[in-house]
Image (tube, rainbow, N blue to C red; front, top):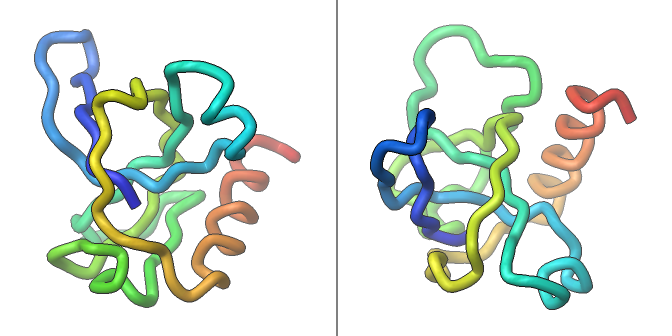
Length: 105
């Protein structure tokens, strides 16, 4: 889990937001960008296609129960800070399945 400086839609401003990195280590080391999925603590209403509720959000360094959204973003490696770790591994497996579902893989 990382805290990333995420640019608002339209490019006007940014805000630190939690993300989970979904790109491979080889990709992450090959350039200046990371590929991540957005995280939200807004769990009200019906979940969106691709949402994954995190089972151990505290270990991940999050302040509230949260879900990973099927919203893919890129961030500069210099604009991120470690927040926590994802545990258990089944959370990440569920994120991979959700991303495959929304991307048609």
